[in-house]
Image (cartoon, rainbow, N blue to C red; front, side, top):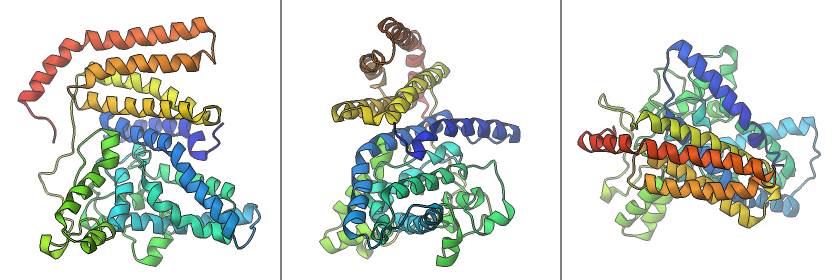
Length: 416
């Protein structure tokens, strides 16, 4: 079984999101949209699934440094746990800060900031490439001699702490604001207002921002998101869009020296002969969040399919050790394909209907091989038959309504 604290806490994430929804409804604050929330969770799913393979990079290299270059053999006890927890957050601060200040690294972190809402589902909006740019920041802990197992535990708890601070349901928290990262401090971090850009990078503690000059108090309510909205619900495109922009801008830069400077300078930097640094501008009065609308039955359809997909994803993550690499790759592709398919429904792509029919067939076949190991064959057949009939009937029954809706969309653009 996968004993990662992040994976084990998955059920609690959804319970807390449900509580937050109730609180926000009581406060009459609407910060959840189905398309945005599912995209947030999709990105978390894709990050966890791709992380199955990237752990070889992060934990593997950390373990190598620990075994080959560790100066001490630090024992695992409650005192060293707290010391490591503090030092880990210090390393996290610098990894996080430089992920904002280095254009190439920003490509791995921009995903987390690209939602234009701020709620607990945003905490799950994680990048699939950030580990590539940040794992080296924790290697000093390996050289000091902190055990890799302890590091995995500490990193998981650090990430779990950051989940609850992604909310507008909690206001200021008094004395805790002085040294802990709180919802108020982290709302600032997610703001795209010029005064809030690149502030409050701490994970668990806010003291590092106060020490190193990156602290900003929450004043007016932030406008959330990034300065150039990604305008897509597709989790794969959200992960690569910044790199795609970098590729196009690198083509504009004629010499190698400036290309390297472009990679490692702040996001927005260009050579002077191409206009120089593009400073962050105030959010204009005509700003509108990216949104799309689909017929209500399709929202219900996506929600139904998503619940089923979450079941497969949870089973996959909790039982990684039981799968060979071929099965891991196959299930990973199926899960990511499903998340992309849902984005196609939300964006009403022309290809969504045909490929969704194909995806359901592949999904059923894959789950047949899983279920037959867990339940009697007749029960597996019954469950998959019910799922297949419901899915195809739903698509067929609403096909006419969707076609009429798409015609109206073509006449009235709806993406803000």
